Amino acid sequence: MATYYTLAVREDGVWAPQFGDYDRDTVEDEKLDYQDHGYSARDLKIIRTGDNQADIDARIAAMN
Figure 1 (cartoon, rainbow, N blue to C red):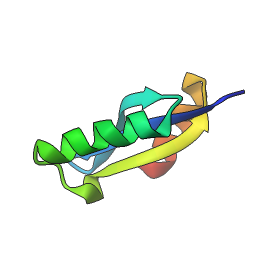
Figure 2: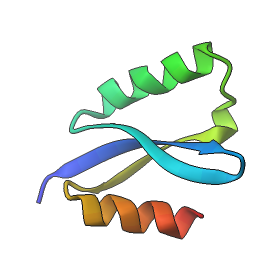
Figure 3: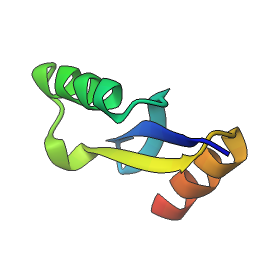
Figure 4: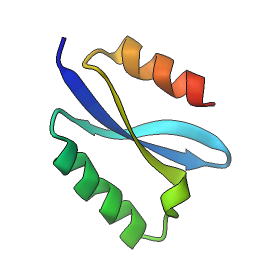
């Protein structure tokens, strides 16, 4: 199983996955784009999971 990075964004108190890639730098760039569009750093988080949707969903659920 490969490592997958997902940008999670918190809106109205709820975390949701917004963007993902196998390369962390790519996800970091996306995070910076969100910050440039007014999102606070505290509402953006990069999570690391396996590369299947169930892993991502479980991690997001644990954050909420």
